[in-house]
Image (cartoon, rainbow, N blue to C red; front, side):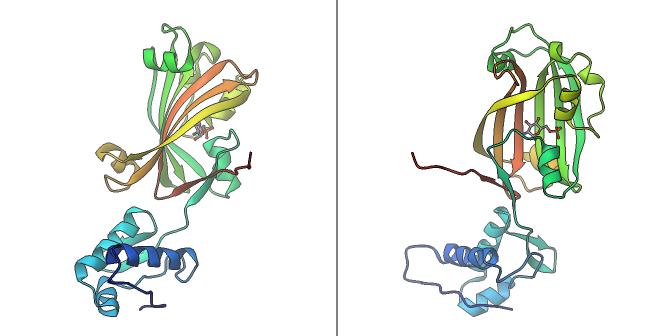
Length: 247
Ligand code: GLP
C-alpha cells in the first residue's frame, strides 16, 4: 500500500528511479514508514507511478544497498532499523559505544598472532624490529555483525596480551589492566566497498558500502603509540557524527 503519494517529475533530467528512491528515503527518515514496516511492492510502485517494473526495482535495490530497507524473499521490502550514530569526538571502545546504546557488544576472534610488521611499525613510528600482537575480530552488536577490526598492539608494552581470550573481553579494558591508560588517537575515515571475504563475515552483499577507519592510539602522555587499528564498519548500519564550530 502507498501511504503517501510522492511527486515524480518525468520531464526532469534526474532519473525517475532516483527521484522515487529519494522520496521513499525521505518518507522513511520522517517516519511515514516505521522500522520493520512493509514498503510498497515493486508492482504497487509500478502501478501508482506508471513506471516500469525495472525502475521500481532499481529504486528498491538502491535503498537496500544504502541500508534503508531490507528485503525478505517473497514477502517484500521492509524498513530497516535506523543507523547507529557514531560520534567522532571521544576515544571510546566498541564495548563502551555499544553499552551507551543499551546494546550488547560481542566479538569473534579471527586471528591472534605475534609478529613483526614493517608497515605497522612505520605507521606507529617505532623500531621495525618491534613485535606486535595482531588481533583480528569480527565485532557484533546484539549478535549482529557490525565491524571487522584488525589491531596491532606493541607487545613490549603489554607482554602476554596474546594469551587473553578476546572473544569475551574488551581490548581497551585489558590495556587498562596492564596499567596502560589511553590518552588520544588520530583517526582517518574513508569509503570502501565490501569485497567477498568482508561481505561474508559482515553478512552483507559484496559491494555494500563500508566506512574504513584507521586509528593510531597513544597513551595518556599523548606521545607513546600503543595501537594501530584498521576497522571496517558497515556503511548500511553506521553514520558518523561530529559537531563543527565556526572559526
Ligand atoms: C573501537 C575502535 C578500535 C578499538 C576498539 C576496542 O572499535 N575503532 O580502534 O581497538 O574499539 O574495543 P574493545 O575495547 O571493545 O575491544
